[in-house]
Image (tube, rainbow over all chains, first blue to last red; front, side, top):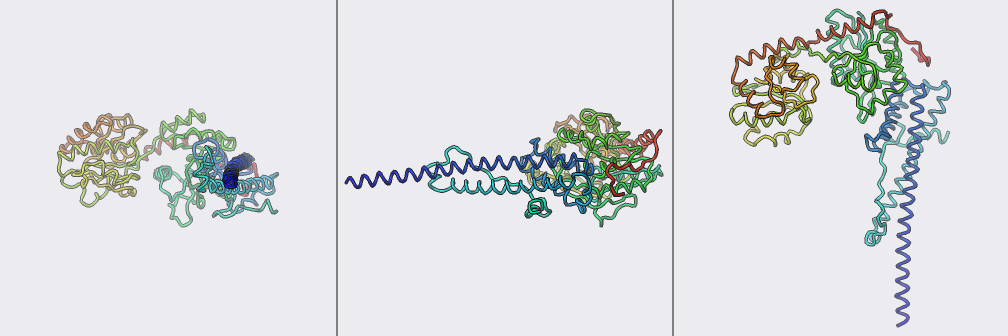
Length: 184
Length: 383
C-alpha cells in the first residue's frame, strides 16, 4: 500500500519535472529567438548603413546612387512591410553589382575596393543571421506544436515566432550569396 | 534648332511619358527642328529614326514598385557620347528625379538644360531628391516644365524652384478618323466610356447607375466600356440582369482600338467625380469629334468651354447624367453641333500648339548660353 503511494508520488514528481523541463526549453527557445532577431536587425541595419555609404561615396553614377539611397530610405520609412523593403534593398544592390564591369570600373578609386568588400560582407552577414533566426523559429514552432505543449499551454502567452522571409542573395538568380570577402 | 531629349523609361513599354516624348519629338520635327531622343530600349526593338537606343533597361525596385530603368556607368558613358556627338542647342530631360537616363544626362552635360516633370512626387521620394548627388544635377536645369498644376505644386513646395505648366498635348490627327468596331454603334444607340474601371474617381459607377435608368427607357441602347483593371463579372454584377447583355466590356485596348472605340458610340461619357487635372481622355474624345457628356468638375468645365463643346451634368448624379445623355441621344442635330464644336476646341490642345509653347521655353534658356557640351568629369569616366 505504502509502496503504491510512493510510486504514485514518484510518478507525479517525474511528470512534473518533465513538464517543467519542457516548458523551460520552450522558454529558452523563445529567448534565443529574440536574441537572433536582434542580431538579424543589427545585420540589416549594418547593411543599409554601408549601402548608404556607398550611395553617398561619389564613386557611383548619380542614377545608381539614387537607386541605392531610395532603397535604403525604404527600409526605414515604413511605407512598405519591413521584409519587402529589405528585399528591395537586396535587389537594388544586386542590380548595381551585376552591371558588367562594375568592379573594374571602380577599382583604382580610393577606398572603393574596401567599401565594396564591406557591402558584400554585410550582405553575407544578413544571409547568415536570417538563416540562424529562421532555424530557431522553426525549432521553436515545432516545440510549441507538440501535443503535450499544446494541451498544457507550455508556451504561455508568448507569441508564435514568425519566419523572416526576404531575398538576400547578392548574386543574380538567387542561390547562395557571395562568399568572396569571407574566404578571400 | 538641334534638340536632344532624354527618356527615362524603356521605349518598348507603353507609358504616358514615352507617349509624351514621342508626340513632342514628332511635333518638333514637323516644325523643321532636328531632334534626337535617347531612351532605354531592347536591342531588337524597332525604333523610329529619331530615337537612339541606350541599351536594355534593368528592372529594379524603386519606390515600392519595379521600374525598368537605365543606370550605371555604361549608360552614363552612352549618354555622354550622345551629348558629345549631338551638338545640341538645348537638352530636354524628362523626369530627372527618376534614377535613369535623364538624371545621368544632367550629370554628364552642361549648357542649356530644360526639364519636364510629369508626376506629382510623393512625399517620401522628395527626401531622396534633395540628396546631394541628385541636387548637383538638378541645379544645372535652367528651365522647368510641369505637365500639370499638381506636378508643379510638388515641385514648388517640396523641391524648390518654379515651373511653367504646359499640359500634355493631343496628337489630334491620330483621333480624327477610325473605323467603328463591327456592329457599333448600332440602331439603338450607344454610350462609351474609357478609363480605369477600378478607380472610383473615374466614375464608372455613376455611369452604370445612369445606364440602368436609360437602358430601361431605351430597349436598344448599349454601353461600351474600355479600360484596364477591374473584374468583368464584378462590374456586370452591378448592372440589373435584364440589361447585362447590353453592357460590353473590352478590357484594356491598344492605342488604335482606343480610337476605334471613340468612333463606335453616339455619345461619349466622362463621369469623373474629381481628381482630374486636365482630362486627357476627354480631350482625345473631342479630337475624335465625339458628342460628349461630362461631369461638371473644374477640369471638364475648362476643356469643354463651360458646356459649349460638350454637355455637362452634376458630378456624381446618375439621374442627371441619364437626363442629359437621354436628351442628347434623341437630338441628332445637337450632336452634330457638339461634334463640330469639340473638333474645333480640340485643335487648341494639339501637339503642334503645345510644341510651340515648349519651343518658347527652349528659346528662353538658350539666350546668353552656349551649346550643350560634355561636363568636365569629376571621376574620369571613360567617354
